[in-house]
Image 1 (cartoon, one colour):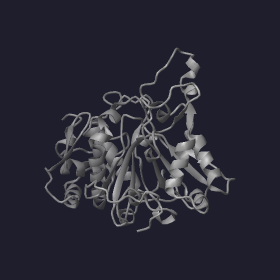
Image 2 (cartoon, rainbow, N blue to C red; image 1 turned 90 degrees about the horizontal axis):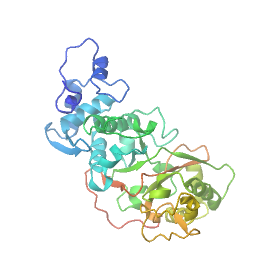
Image 3 (spheres, one colour; image 1 turned 30 degrees about the vertical axis):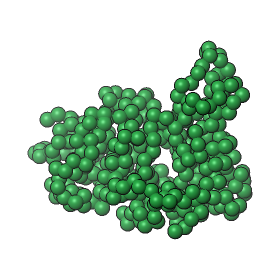
Image 4 (cartoon, rainbow, N blue to C red; image 1 turned 60 degrees about the horizontal axis):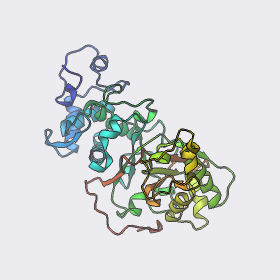
Length: 367
């Protein structure tokens, strides 16, 4: 049986130690997986609506077929409950949408991994963590949803390190990278509402991203002071956004969010302030011509290439995807660089639709 056989049919193996057998077949992410019994797989398929052979999507770069049965197998192996199925399915449809460029994300030498952010009532319905240690361990839904996605990217998509996955360093985010927005502690409308959905909609957002970069500010008691620390974290010449533009994410901790909001700043204000102030001089990006005249074709054509020209981290404020997450104690936020212009984030409702009604542009509406 080949290493990818688990993507085609449920294994029916008589083996003393199934966990070790799955390791031998390279059916894991390096951690033990749960045996996908018929009963557990059937329960997940039922949660997906039945029809186990129905093709959900095709996963690059191997272009493996993700049927409902294969999706269920990987979910069970990751430790998911059946009720997580709509989130994992929606995430896989978002990841395989053309704008995301999963083929490139899977094969890049960069450390990018798909970050999944969940909004709406489904967060509480399935017990996701949006609070303390939101990017860390301790929550089954967050951990296993993210892990199921990684197992699918490995087994179905063929993203095996050293083979089709050429990441030089990788990161722990390539085990699991899944959070929920802390809508309850946010002073602003949830992300999906800002983007035109209704509060009662549940949604998934995916972006190819580096791990979170911590932003610490225990001093500022005003919006500008907090945001200047985030600007500082964003303004480096080392992340992919600096040299390749694209999109990024910013996660603001609830304490920082409250400090910003008490000055009357909206989510729209925050994104625009970060965009206007985060960036680098072209002379820094080109190393002052130390290595010859550099014309960076990865940056938008309309950027000026004069030495003193300011090069923004992303082309527009709309390319900064802003969330509130984390515990209520602690004055921390995070900058999450993206992969660059080679990918675009994707937002989808759990029902698969992407249509957006009138967007909440200033971030203040609480529908």
